Image (cartoon, rainbow, N blue to C red; front, top):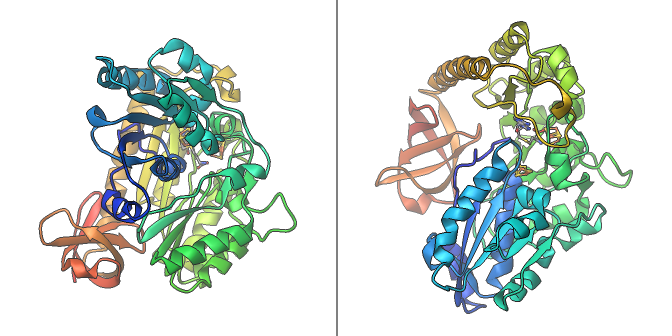
Amino acid sequence: MKLLNLRLRPIHLTLKAFIAYKVRSTMFDKLLYIETFGCQMNVNDSERIVSTLADLGYAPTNDPASADMILLNTCSVRGGAEEKVYKRLANLRIYKRDGKKQIIAVGGCVAQQEGEELLRKLPYVDLVIGTHNLHLLSDMVRGAERGERRSETTFIDNDQRLDLFPSIRGESRLSRFVTVMQGCDNFCSYCIVPFVRGREISRRSADILAEVRQLAGEGVREVILLGQNVNSYGLKTEREPTFAELLRQVAEIEGIDRIRFTTSHPKDMSDELIACFGDVPKLSGQIHLPAQSGSDAVLKRMGRGYSRGTYLDKVHKLKALRLDIVITGDIIVGFPGETDEDFEQTLSLMEEVRYIDLFSFVYSPRPGTKAAELNDDLPRAVKMARLNSLMELQRRHTSEISRTYVGSTMTVLVEGEGKLPGQISGKADIGRIVNFAGDSSLIGSFVEVKIVKAYPNSLLGEL
Ligand code: SAH
Ligand code: SF4
Ligand code: F3S
């Protein structure tokens, strides 16, 4: 799962399109500044927040000083997250001094975890909104405008949750997330997500397909099917299709030319889903398949439900069906009890898979998780040395794989201006960003681009 790594990521991507749309219906008289941390679920939730608050007259801004409301959409996947949120809030709070009326709100997974505690500890925080409570946001903000402080973190662990979820409007973009499921029941031993996102719930396929059809009608060309563990979609209910069946149904929708999904749990990656990579041409040639470790002993303690062997089997099947498939992943180093041999197994797994990108994390104990009870006694220096050698190997793989693309032709969905003047930019089928000289009139179309140079995070091409 691509984490934003606690990097600040103010939402400004669609400001122009958003305002153009909203101006027709609403008068903006207030400004909202929002920072998003963590995973795509949070990015998606931030889009819902922006849409919801537009109806109350809030337009997004990139300037916290001028904002009438500041919202941090937080992540608590790794330790220290709470402290980082406290620090960031303390910095943002300067804008609230001098009696300025400004609402400060905390959302996302730290909000879910800390709840009322945040209001108690930080008197300048007005609102704490949990991961299942976005439908209450309008009401909460209206209250805060009158000076009320409020925290809402009640879980809604039934189908109602998805019906209550506010939708995203006013975004004219070529690529859009479509939520297919929420929450997680896997309880990997190190992970806090099931505690802060609640039980796994699949959305009705009819609703998903209707949303994709509507997006296609609005000019969206690519959808990213979104959930903590999309490939266990529908497994809890007889009525719904499996994820592979859903994917095929989405692929039939005219106007949608590319489909991605995130995130996959290797244990639920069925043969039926793997087969889609062979015969659903609209399915992107990139898959995120987090292994977490290459050692069976560690995988067992992590409670991942697959072995090194079954993981690699799936990777080989995928590679056999799509020769050019590109795999990304997540690895945790320094899990309690990880020996040098275990770590070597992870490096050798990387050699066998050859990820194009890898998100690697040093293990950090999370409150309430099973692994937090294990003895986390590996010295920090060992953990860091392992992380560094893993990252070095990954840099080599990324650059070797990227270099093989030079000279090839890729189909790119042009999404916007490029890095340099005169350049436009888009995503290739394999998920890499490609920059190339071209006219902005091509934005919104698929074009064939010849790759001339490979950089660590992007490719340079020619039309
Ligand atoms: N649902 C996604 C994961 C979301 S969390 C999945 O299963 O793929 C994103 C990543 O954070 C995980 O894949 C894992 O690599 C990392 N992570 C989660 N908990 C962690 C912890 N306690 N310490 C270090 N990394 C962790
Ligand atoms: Fe966390 Fe495991 Fe669920 Fe992913 S599948 S969110 S790692 S518990
Ligand atoms: Fe972080 Fe919550 Fe996502 S803990 S990784 S923002 S589900």
